[in-house]
Image (cartoon, rainbow, N blue to C red):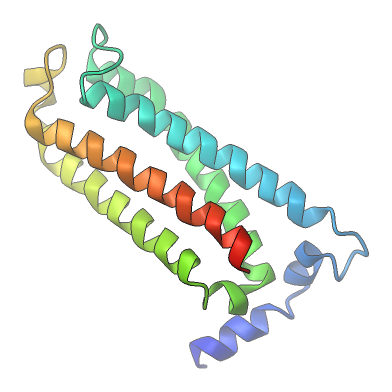
Amino acid sequence: MHITTLLASMRNWPISAAVRGDLLGTDWLFPIIETVHVIALTLVIGSIAMVDLRLLGIASRSSPASRLLVEVLPWTWIAWCSAAISGTLLFISKADVYARNTQFELKFVVMGLAAVNMLIFHFGAYRQIEQWDSAEPPLGAKTAGALSLVLWIGVVFFGRWIGFTT
């Protein structure tokens, strides 16, 4: 099956019709899911920003970075899973439209770059965290924090732009 055919067929799925309001006779489901998505994304970005600001040495300097990561990252992952589920529901409601949307594609490119940045940090500066945990983070950690902030702002920028182009 070609990807275009698959995306078009998603439009006929009962859950897709329900999200669009075609199945249940109400158009409340899409905005409810969108609200959950925005709240979850806010929690993702807010918790990531807390860590990034610590890596930059701007906030929480008196707290060890490892402690902040242990306290914050479980909430980040819970929120990320909620955002992924709600985002998937929004996507399948008009998969064929979103898949051709430049801003949607750019949002995913930027999210992919944020994931690569996270992996580089995890396998790089994070491996020596015990050396800088309560001190000034090294350049690699600061760079990862700054890049992360920029990339997640890009996710919000392109994500919000999608609403004006679909």
